[in-house]
Structures are given as structure tokens and as C-alpha cells.
Image (cartoon, rainbow, N blue to C red):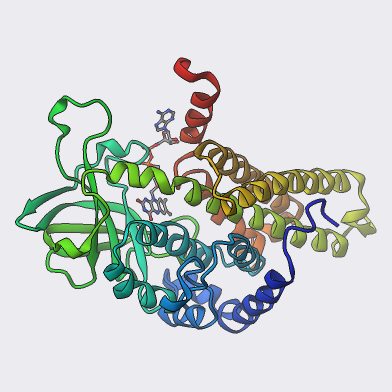
Length: 391
Ligand SMILES: Cc1cc2nc3c(=O)[nH]c(=O)nc-3n(C[C@H](O)[C@H](O)[C@H](O)COP(=O)(O)OP(=O)(O)OC[C@H]3O[C@@H](n4cnc5c(N)ncnc54)[C@H](O)[C@@H]3O)c2cc1C
């Protein structure tokens, strides 16, 4: 029994049964088809909405789960990882852990009524567009602009690598609203603008081809004189950078939780495999070198679980700091990458065959150390916390 065995209670386990039903009926048989087409069916989103898997933190009267308990999101991540459904998990996580927190924190009551019920039902899909061809880690390089025109704003620019880019009905676009005058220290003013499917001047580019997360629709987005009414502005259009910073701990914890879940599943598949697979007249599991590898992986995963679960408790208590989330993100994602690599090795040639879940897990893992703030950026934040002005 893991040291942290009291982490989930009976409510989470009851929810786990609901998620398993969803996975059995709506996910397990579709993974290859989604990967081949490079997109997940919209019907899966609707079914997820019906099963109560979207919008945990949204008030119940607006269609959500009405809970801030992040452990429900952990259960979902664990069950999707066990099914090898990393693309679906990444798309759902983008909606629940990145898109919705902005809307919940910054949205007006009218915006909440207009969008939250559809997002919880899976009828509306959200995307968050920060990255541009020349601005990824360094968001201060964003070139997309929003120019005021009466009470409206006019958006021009382009974004790339946007998760849910093809499916999205609502896109939070980060755009520059001024040049800062070159006088004030700190980032120039940015705003967050909700662009809707069908808005004139909003076009989607290519569905990007990737090495992993094949079914997650990642796309380029283009904005040419897109008119955004005042009702679609989120928060203060001069303080977008601050708004972005406020949500980073949750986004990074979400990635850490996903990585922990994926590493746990990889270990479980591999332990089963080495018990079954024979070489030199005995199961692989009877070889001491293999036992040692499994022991090392199991220990690393459990130690990581302790830290990530402490971070989950902290976010539930509203005390997760940006630095602690950065530590969880870089540590868990590096562990994830290392674990799937070592596990795949124990599968031998079969691990390289696409039909084995460990093969898909291997390529899906690679992005974890890059998006949501690359791990080098996590280390800059952590070093700054430890060393202060020296970093
Ligand atoms: C599948 C996928 C989905 C994505 N989804 C979204 C999304 O939904 N919305 C969105 O806005 N973005 C999204 N992204 C973009 C992602 O967040 C960026 O790719 C990431 O932030 C890195 O930015 P970059 O690619 O421009 O790399 P760069 O910023 O060019 O960095 C390249 C390398 O240099 C390192 N580096 C950069 N600066 C420093 C420094 N000061 N010191 C040391 N090393 C440094 C980086 O860590 C990295 O290793 C997605 C990307 C992918 C691949």
C-alpha cells in the first residue's frame, strides 16, 4: 500500500467508477482511429459532459461539478493514463485547468451564464492562445495586437501550437494592448480576448503534425481585423500578463499530475509484461537486473507521488505557490520521460510496436517537459527563489 494511501476517499473512488465506465464505452476502442485522423470525436466531449467529467470547479447551478477539490481531476488523469488516452487527457486538461480558470476568475456573471453551461456539457470547447511563432517561453515577445475601437477591440496577429485549435468554439487570445510607452519597467500591457467560432477574420490554419499526442488537435490560428466586443474581454485589458501569471501554478500542477499518472501506468504495464515474458527459460521478472530496474522505477514514482500529492493538497487549500508548482512540473515530467524510456526497454522489440500502449506512451511523454512552460523556465523560477538577485 503506498505511503499516501489516504489521499483519495470514498467519493473519489465512486467517481473513479464513473470514469471507468466512460473509458470503457467511449475511449478504449477509439484510440487508434483518433490517432489516425488526428482528432477526437466531438461526441466524446458531449459524453464526457454527460458523465460529469468537465468543469469540476464550475458552480453546480451553471452545469459544473461545484467542487474545488483537485483530487477529482487526479482520478480522471489516472484513469485516462491507464487507458493510454494521453491526447484526450491533454485536451480535457486544457479546458479544465487552463481555459476555465480564466473564465471563472475573470469572467463577468453575464459571461459565466453565456459560456459555462456549454463548456461543462462538452457542447463548447475552449482553447487558450498565447504562443506565437516568435514568442513561446518569452511571452513578452507577443506581437498579436488589440486596438481599441469605441468599446470594441480589433485583433490582428497569429498564434501557433494551440491545443484544441481545430475544435475550439471559444479561444482566449492573449494580445498586446499598448507598447508600455517604453517608460514603465516590466511587461507591456496585454489583454485577454475571447474570440468565438465564426467571428469574421478568425481563421484556423493547419492541424499540425506531431510526433506524439496524435489525436490532440493542435493548430495555428490567424486573426485579421477580428472585432471583439467589450462583452468578450476577460479581466483588465492592461493586466493580461498578471492574469496569466495567476493561473500558472494550476496549469503546471495539471501537467505534473498527468506525468505522475502516466509513469504509474507505464510501471504497471511493464510489471505485468516482465512477469509473463520468458527468456532463457524463465520469466524476465526472475532476472535480478530487471527486478532492480522495476524497484528503482517504483521508488522514483512513489517518491514523486508524495510531492505531487502534497502540491494537490496545497492547491485545494489555496496555498500552492508558483515555485512549488514549477518544482512539481519539472520533476514529474522528467521522471515521466525517464520512466517510459526504461519501461519500453523492458518490452524489447514489442515496446517499439505501435500496438503496445508503452509505444504510444513513449512518444506522448516527450511534450511534457516542453509545454506549460519548458523545464528550463521552471528552473529559472526555482533558482530565482533560492538565489534571489543572483539569478
Ligand atoms: C503539443 C503542443 C501543445 C501546445 N499547446 C499550447 C496551447 O494550447 N497554447 C499555447 O499558447 N501554447 C501551446 N503550446 C506552446 C508551448 O507552450 C511552447 O512550445 C513552449 O512554451 C516553449 O516555447 P517555444 O516552443 O517557443 O520554445 P522557445 O521559447 O523557443 O524555447 C526553446 C528552448 O530554449 C529554452 N529556453 C528559452 N528561454 C530560455 C532561457 N532564458 N534560459 C534557458 N533556456 C531557455 C526552452 O526551455 C526550450 O528548451 C503547445 C506546444 C505543443 C508542442
